[in-house]
Image (tube, rainbow, N blue to C red; front, side):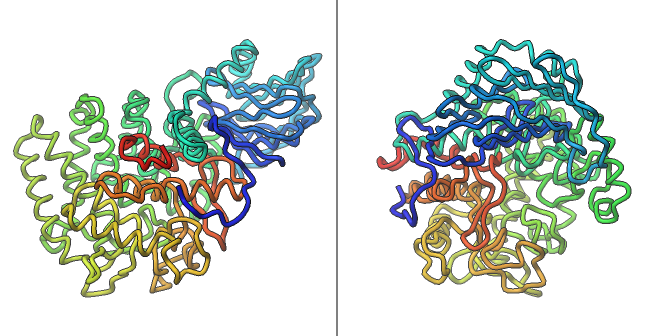
Length: 580
C-alpha cells in the first residue's frame, strides 16, 4: 500500500469494497444500454448508447451519508439502482420534480425544438428525434426507462421493480472480485472492473454493440482498437464472447490496404444521420474522418491492436477461428507495416503525425510504443498462423527476429531505457515513457533489459521517487522529463505534466504494475493503488481516465482504466501481502 496520504479523503473505502462520503459526489453510471450522471442531491442526466443524450431529470435528493458501489448509490432515504437486463433505473425514495428532454443528441448535433412532455397519470414521456425516456412516479420512488423507440422504453417499464434492484445488487457482487483484500485494494478492484464490465454495450435488439471507451465516449457511439484492447484484458476470462464479437466489429474498419481508424462508429439511425451531417460539412472533422464508419481514420497503432486482440483471444479460449476468418486482413496489415520499414531493420518508421495513442504528439521515426505492438503482432502471426500459411508465418517470425536485433541500435539510451521516438539522423525524444513498456509486454527485449527498464521507471516515473517534479507524491507520470521540442506537441500535451506530457493514466499504471508482477519484482502496489488513492482524495467516483495535480482529471468510468484490476487479478498470487 502506498504510504502517501497527502490530504484527507472525500471518499472513504469500506471493508466491503464500497465507498462512503458525507457529501454528495458526481456518480457516473453505465449499463448495456443506459448511461448517465447522477448527482445524489437530486439530478440525473440520462443518455442511451447509440442514441445520445435524452433527458435531464431533477428529483428530491437524498441525505448523507452516501454509500457508493458500481451503478448503485445508497443513502438515507433511498438510492439509485441501475438495471442490467433493460434500459431502466430506479430512484428509491425520490419524488420527481422536472423532466426535460434534450434539444440535441450531442454537442455537435442540430438543436431541435422540444416536444411537449406527454403526461399519463403518474407517467411522463419525453420524446426526441433520436430516442424516448419515461419517468413514472411510484409510491416508493421514480422508475425511469429509455429507448431508441417508444417500444423499447415501454418494454423496459415492464421490468419488475424488485428484480431491477436485485440485478443492481448482483452486479455489485460481480464487480467485487477480490473480497479478501483490504478496503483500498478491494474498492479499486470493484470500481476498476466495473469500468470493463460496463463497457460491454448492446443495441436496442440486445445484440453486442461494442466495447465503449467510457461513459463520455458515446457521441457518436464508437468502439476503439486501442481502448478496447486494454479494456478486454479484464474480460478475456470473464466475457470471452464479448471479445469475440469485438473482433468482428473492429474488422469492419480494417481496409484492404491494412489501414484502420482509431475507432469504428456504431450509432443508431437518428444519431448516425446527425453525425453524418457534421462529418461531411465540418472542415476539420471531414479531414480526419474519411469514411462514414471511421472515427479518426488511419491510426498507426490500430491495425496492430486488431492482430493482438485476435492473438489474446486465441490464447485465452483456444478458438482460432477469427484468425482464419480475417487472415486476409492480417496479411494486409503485415504488408503495410513492412512497407514502413525503410532501412531493412524490421522496424517500421512512423510518419510524423499525431495518430496513435499519443494523439496530441507528432511522434515520428522509430516509436518505442508502436514497435512493441508491431513485434507482438508479428509473434501472433508466427505462433498462430502456421496452420493457415506456414511460409508466411515463418516470414513473420524472421521479421520479428530482425526487429528485436535492431531495436537497441535504434532506441536504446545510455541509461538503459528506450527513447520515446525519433531517429538518430533527425531528432530523438529520449525521455522515459510508460507506453514504451509495450516492448516489455510483448517480449521485444531480454528479461535482464526489461528489469533494468522497470528499475528506471520506478526511479523516474513514480512521483514519490522523483524530486525534480514539483508536486510531491501523487501517482505515476506517463512521461518524464517533459517533451523537449514544443513543436512536437499540441493542445493539452503542450503543457508539462498534462495529458501525454506527464499525467497519470491508470491504464498505463496498470501496464506498469503488470510488468513488475510478470517479471517477479516487488513494488507493484504503488502503481496499482496510488492513482485510486488520488481518486478518493479528490472525490472522483469511478475509474478516472487520467489526471495530474496542476491540471485536474479526464473522464470518469473509463474502460481501459480497468487495467489495474486486470493486472492484479491475473497475478493475484504475486501481490504483496499488504494489498491482497
